[in-house]
Amino acid sequence: MSIFGSHQHNFEADITILPLGPKTRNGHPFNGIRWDFCYVEDIDERGLAPTVSMIWPEFVDDKNVPIPTDVPLQGSFRALMHIVSEEMVEWHQQRLEIGSRFVCTEGARIVAEGVVVSLSPMK
Image (cartoon, rainbow, N blue to C red; front, side, top):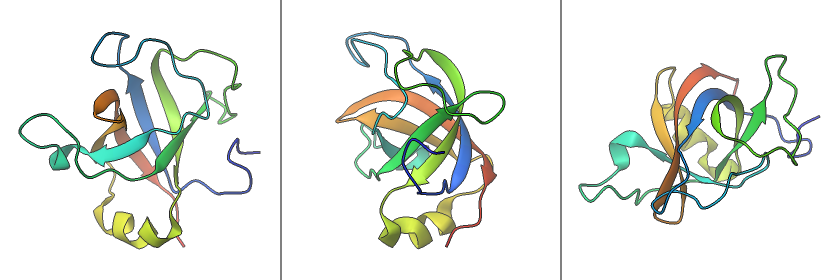
């Protein structure tokens, strides 16, 4: 069962959580984090991600079982990605492809980097 309830994931990605620091995070995230998502090509010349979407990662182990929500996360993980806004599914469907690169953000801070590894049927 998904940590996001009955919502089916829209694609899978490999995500690397950036090391802790003043420009990223002060503490490790946990599964269920509600980061925003930005395509790498949308990052502006200042390094900011002005176009963000609510696409939330659900980090899973090598058997596609969600990692418990009380385990601090650091390093690289496979994630089932959930496009939260149903109105945005079609827009993302036109942009997403295997190999698409993206970042995860908290406000103006980039906290993780990822790449799309598989697409699920989007309805």
